[in-house]
Image 1 (cartoon, helix red, strand yellow):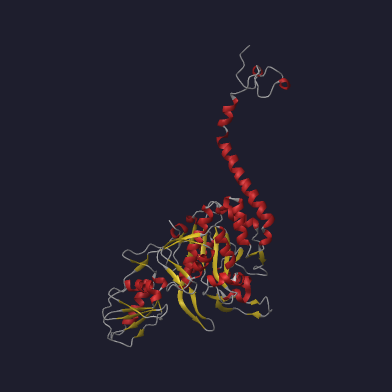
Image 2 (cartoon, one colour):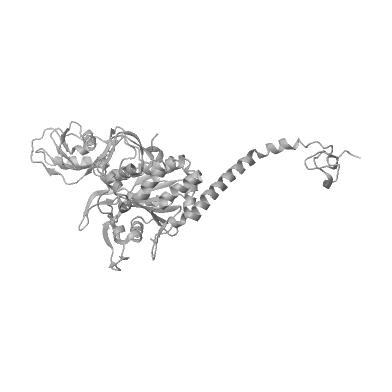
Length: 500
C-alpha cells in the first residue's frame, strides 16, 4: 500500500480512538509540543488585534457605561431648533455652534474679585464659534464669529413675552439676549447659510472646571500681556494656566489695539492648546479621566436634545486620532471695522465675497484655504496691521496728502477711518505717530510702515492711533506680523499656535 501523507490528524498519529486519547498528548503519552510554536507564530497579529479590541472594549465599557449611566442627566437641555423652518440644506460633516456665555452669577464671590468678574451678567454671548468636524472625523475647522458682527435677526416671537418681532439689524451677541439659543442659531444660519447640527453652550464655570481637571493648559506668548480690566498679567514665554488665569487670557480685550480681533486669536490659540492637552495626556483613553473631564464640562453646559452622550463619545473617540495639526482656525473676514448702525452703534461688517467662500468650504467639508504667503520684502512687526486702527491727518500744505497716506495704509492692511482730516499745524516736517502707551506695540508696528516717522506718547488717547503726515512722507512700507495666527482672517493650524 502506498504510504499515506504526513498529517497531524492521520490515524497513525492518533492510534487510540478519540474518546480514549488524552488531550494534548501523543500516543506514547508525551506532550504534543510541536504545535505550540505554530500557535505562537500565528498570534503576532492576532494578539495585536485582541489587545486593540480589549482596549476598545475596556474604553467603551469603562467610558460608555460610566458616561451613559451617570452623565446624561447632567446635561441641561435646550431646544434651539424648535419650529425652525426654511433652514439651509445639510452639508457634509457635523457643524456645532459653540456659544460662550458669562454665567458669572455661578462663580464664588472670592473668585469674582480675584479674576475681576464684577458687574451684572449680560445674558448675552461672549464667544460664538462654528466648529466643523469633517465627515471622516480627521479634521476640525473652527471659525470665530465676532460678537460685534453686524447681523440681521429674522422675524421671531419672544419666548418670554410672546411679543412678535419683525426682521431687524442687531449685533450678533444681542441675538441671545433677545431670543436665546433659538434666535442665535437662526441668526447664524441666516448669515452663513451653514446648517447647524448641534448647539453647545458653555459658561465661565464649566470653562474653569474643565481647565483645572485637565491639570491646566500651557500657552506660549511672544510679548507680555497685561489688561487692567481682567487682571491678566503675563510675561513673555511659556505659562501653564489654571482655570481662573485661562479665563482672564481668553476674555482680555485691552492688551493692545486689536480689541475683539486679538481676543479671538487668543481664544483660538487656547482652544488649540486645550485640544492638544486633551489628546496628548491620555484623557481620551482613560475611562476615569474621561469621566472626570466630561463631568466638569457637562455639569454646567446646555446642549440641544440631539447632542447626547452617544455623540459626545463619538466625538471623543474621533479626537483620539487628532493632533494639533488636525485642527484649523480662522476668523470670519471683516470688510469694515467701524460700521455704524443707527440705534446699535459701531459694528463689524463682514467681507461678503470672502465670507461666502469660507462658508462654502464648510458646507462642502473641505479644508479651509491655507494662509496666503506674505509678499517678499515685508517687514516683520509685533502686531498685524489688520488689528491696528488709524486716523490720518495732513500736517502739511500739500493738498491731498492725507488722502494719499490713508489710502496707502489701508492698502497695506491697516484699519484706517477712511476720513483723513487736516491737522491744526500745517508745518509738520516729520511724520508723527501719536499713541496711548497701552498700545505701544501697535504704535511701533505702525511706525515700521512709515519710515522716518516719530513716535509720540499721548496718555489717554485710547486704541485709535493718529498719524500726522509730514513733509518727509514718501511711501508706506509693507509689514506683516511675526505671529502666523495674527491677521485679518488667515487660517492657521493648531501646531502653528501651540507651544513647541
